[in-house]
Length: 462
Image (tube, rainbow, N blue to C red; front, side, top):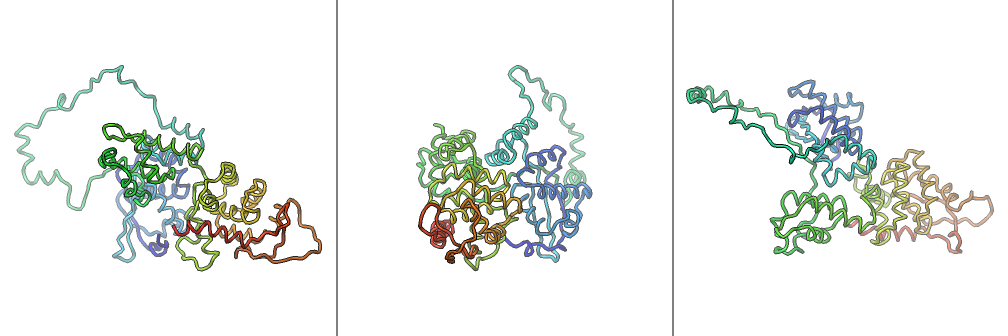
């Protein structure tokens, strides 16, 4: 991904168009269903562009600087929120970079229908996790109507030809002359308004279909059974539940019928059952998320130091995956995951910040996550409004003596004793003296840091 200033500057111009007419009902769908997923800033950008489209009706160019003034935010924020709209399928962007300044076309896309949204394998789960069970059920009820038992009624609707007659031959002659033919078609350079709700796109790199097909018998699962819709469903389910190609083979085999047909709803249910069996959880939770792009400081920067390398890694990995890598590939305990879930939900800490917390506590407490210790630091970081990995590291470095007094359960007393300097990670390099609680062995943080880095090396190589 490019830096925003390489792609966009304030004097670059843009014009707004839409994929068909947007209706007031679309506004309800975007407000209640999409906004919890994209956030208020991206929602505001969509509504601002929509407002400009309604104001001008026809295409009218303006600068991005005017958009910055209207929204009262920076160009980088506009760029980041634009990417969210593109990723979720609400915006298509085109650019003419052969002219200076550049000209962008922002084409607003209508949202999915409520039925499409609530039956989407990814959207429905993400919305459920964002708003909770009670609100999710309320939204489903709001966007649904009582079903009608059509078997109790007889269709009496007339067809077109029952009511209307064909054009008389004499009238047909009148419309066949060249002048009238022109009237029946649009002038060059115009096109009719259209409307189609384009869903978001998952890249092909999300799922290895070559490996998936390599292990399947063509007699049992012919390639024709993997239609475009089934293929897209497989990608979404793999992305959502973390299902690898080999496991997906088993899931597909469990739902394919004798006619080599794969029911997508059955596929979704089988994937959900697999996840519940493998993970022991109802649905993917907060611990599977990664640091949002807007709060990453190393997104487009090549690390030059060990600290920068660690920052970049903690920005691009989920807390759950970090626990897996630290334990050498073993699944985290349910109690550890629940602890992480609780602090992310209650303290509203971002995933990258939680990663720093895990890393810090693991180094300080002999590779254990002490609930009371983790919660106390998390509460402190929440009050300090820590949002980035770098901020969390700096605060951990600044407050390490206070945190250590919390770990031992008492304030450090002023007594004369030998003070030594441990070998610490660069971002925790400071005077420090302690012994392992309940043992006579001194804690060697440098050794533990090396152990952690070895365990995480696999992820970095990926």
